[in-house]
Length: 134
Image 1 (tube, one colour):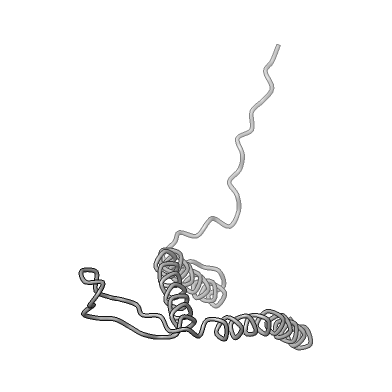
Image 2 (cartoon, helix red, strand yellow):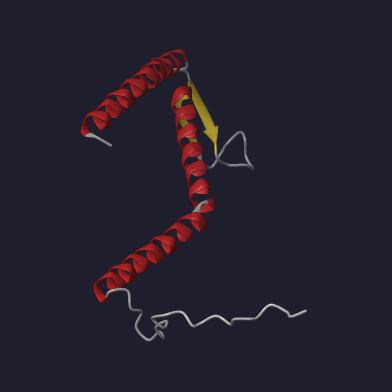
């Protein structure tokens, strides 16, 4: 990939990000302005009237915090599910590196494999059969 193509791709990516992020920021700000009322969240499942632990914060903050927590939980779950693929990729990268080293060693030695029996220089004569006589 050339530098011009790479820089064009970066500019295109920045434009797409701006097209997505600017309206998203406007929606989030409008949501925050519309939902400024205070909400109390009870963390005590046994006493609704007098909770032992509770949070009092604006509704938009509660929703945004819950969205962020949901994204984090989803990202962690996705990362954990992909562990076998990352492990396989690391193993295959090691194999490729080992094979490249072996290829370079074979190029340096002229193609002779150490410890292997070399094939004879000329192929053996083939068996010659005479046609059947009548």
